[in-house]
Amino acid sequence: MHYSVLGAISFRCDGFSSAPIESSDLEVLRQMTSFLQKAPSSKVIALVGGKGPDYSYALGEHLSRLGKKILVIRCDFPVKFGREEAPGLLQAWEGKSFDVSIRKGSYCDFLNSGGFTVYGVEILQSQWFKELLGQLKKEYDTVLLWFRGALDSAGSKGSLVISDLSIVTVSGEPTQYLTPWSKSVRVSFVTVGDG
Image (cartoon, rainbow, N blue to C red):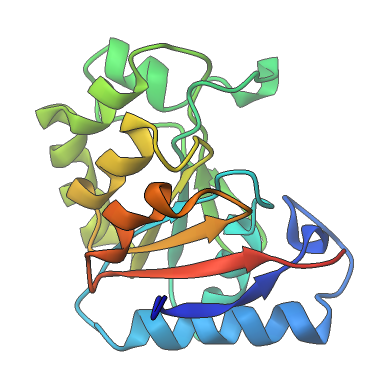
């Protein structure tokens, strides 16, 4: 259907991992990096995971190996979370503070969602979040926004508004779910591979 597909990412890249990245996944991460470098002024990248693996950490690590300072923001408000996820974005928004709890990682930094809320879409579309992103873009070379929602959800579609580029994971969704995404040259796709 003439969609830009970067490759198939496996569940071996799901979340934090101490295992080395397999060569097939490394190739997909390289393809993602190449896509991002085609628009060098792009600083905010939406990663829409859908039913696929959470490769935000793997991509953040890969980009940091290129000498970039990376921040991963977890925008997954609708999913269950552990107590260790707070404080995060939700608590900063509730307090209307730009003093967010960024955690330092080995390769890149992280900002957790801070917990469950049905108003995640509203947080991410608020003037407060736009101003926060503006501040973070001054401190980081690239800000990766991780979304877990379904491709047809308001939160996932809303990522197009707040990001410069998007990488969308496809895992058996019907074609009509892909149509809104495919109309933008700022979007590329990955599929879910074995693993």
